Amino acid sequence: MWTSQVDTNVASVRLGFLETPAPVAVKLKEDGPILCSRCCVAFSCLSTVAGKVWTCEFCNESNSIRNSGLAKKIAAGTEVDLLFRAPSKKAVKRPPSVIFVMDISGSMGVTTPVPYQPVQGGPDWKCRCGVQNPANVIGCTHCGVEHVYHVSRLRCMQDAVKAQLQHLLETQPTTCAGLVAFNDEIIIIGDGSGDIRVLPETML
Image 1: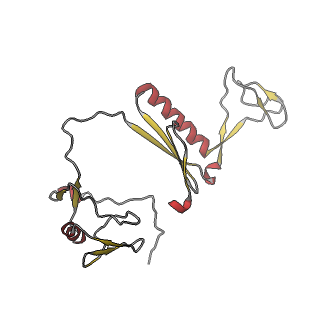
Image 2: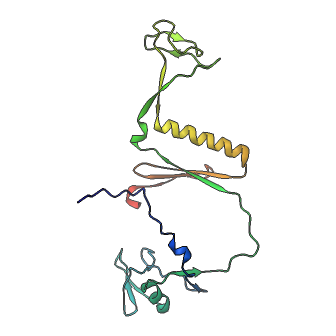
Image 3: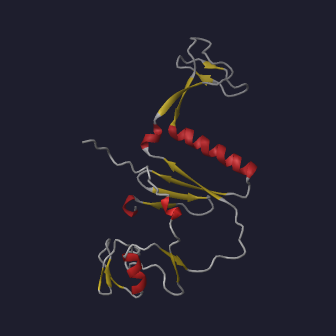
């Protein structure tokens, strides 16, 4: 028997549904998705109803089902689209948005040696032998040892994001850019115009 550990970074998507008939569309005025009154989890085909009461699978809250017809369709596994309002005839053009999600956990501190690229007019660098060397030379003028940088994964990612932001500024200046960082908690920085929000591990 061959077994493997589940890889949560891999998703399987069935594209065959594109050939199937369109799902049932239910146009709602006042009713929306059936949500738990305590934790706001949505009623699904995995939920069970006893009479007209649905017991939430997550928090065990007893919820009274008002729209029993919709609940029956969902419980039967019927794919249902909930249309709260008709699509606007006149499309509203909004600037595109880009969210950068960065891993800042401890593993991102691992470094890789990168050969030094000489820069004319750049800052001097100090060899391990203690001798200061001009920026336009690779090897130390005293001991001949080649200058090597140790660049972390985080630094590489930061440089990549900076390059992307510069590219967006030059090609799509109206694009809204935001930043979300994560380690053992999620740090929502956004576009920098508001307060930073931190979601601890207990909220994930």
